Amino acid sequence: MGTAEHNTQEVHVAVGVIVREGRVLIARRPDHVHQGGLLEFPGGKVESGESVQAALVREIAEETGLEIPREALRPLIGIRHDYGDKRVFLDVWRTERAQGEALGREGQSIDWVSPESLRDNDFPAANRPIIRALKLPSLLAIMGDSCSGDEGAQHFQRALSGLPKQDPSVLVVLRAPNMTMHNYECLAEKAMELCDAAGVGLVLHGSAEVFDGNPDAVGLHMPWREAEKLKARPVPDGVWLGVSCHDADEIEHAAAIGADYVTLGPVKPTATHPGTPSLGWAKFHDLVARSTIPVFGLGGLDVADLDAVWQAGGQGVAGIRYWWPEFAA
Ligand SMILES: Nc1nc2c([nH]c(=O)n2[C@@H]2O[C@H](COP(=O)(O)OP(=O)(O)OP(=O)(O)O)[C@@H](O)[C@H]2O)c(=O)[nH]1
Image (cartoon, rainbow, N blue to C red; front, side):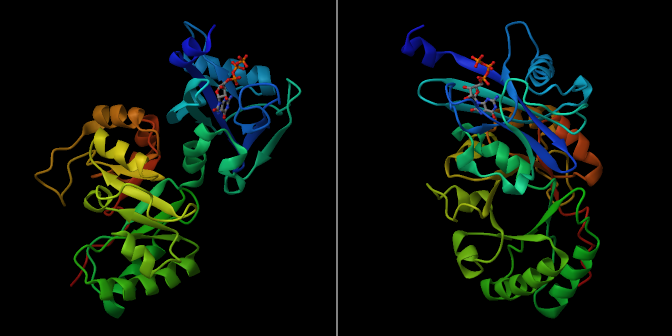
């Protein structure tokens, strides 16, 4: 096969993220193969006529000896990537129910590592969003109506104390679009102390300037109106960058400026945005399938919807209602 022909044919690759006791299974690709010497998640090409789940069960058994019940797989993310010499579609699925002892059955070295220890440069370039999906939590807790000063901080503290700390894992987004910049920065300072003490990451909300004013936050979440102005990532690597999106074009732009994740919604009708048409699960599923970065479902969702979001290939649930107590002015 000539190089030109090689490059036009997209290779469908089934990739398995196998998690056990909070650690994930990785292997080293042999030196002589495509992207050789780098780390990878087990998997391989989907054969013609084979389902992606069947390919995963087969490849993982061949490579590691682990047995995966097919119903224990859930979609994690789909990534299209052009290496120049090869175009791949990484169809990534996750399971926590692999059975047996993992072995490098093809002579490759394997290891169980914590998601936090994964580094982009050790993996093929296409893997970056997989690593993001593994490090991101399942819940984005977005702040609802609040006020500034001590009262706002107390309200925040009350809401924070009701949040799950570990399972499902969580990041808090300090969203207060109607607050003056000065009041927001004061609240951010207090919220940061409270989040540090609670062991929860705090993501700021707004423009790049908001992050410049509080660079110790773990991330910046941008409303679409701010993100659409940008051509490049406004925060360093290692700081979460999220964007609120509502359709496929917005998600594509967010990915192009280097966002780590997006929120997408409203999935269901919401009380806060009564006139806005909701996407529904089918459209949500369709847009998630087209996204190359992790997608949180937003709008009318609760923690109880986490499983439905996962089944649709989403990262988790973003929302206000499920954690933010009604604001008593
Ligand atoms: N298994 C796996 N493949 C990956 C990952 N990331 C990534 O870009 N790839 C790419 O996806 C393709 C998978 O090919 P493979 O070599 O593992 O599949 P295979 O065993 O069926 O093919 P082969 O027999 O031709 O080597 C390669 O081009 C590889 O570079 C990953 O995390 N896991």
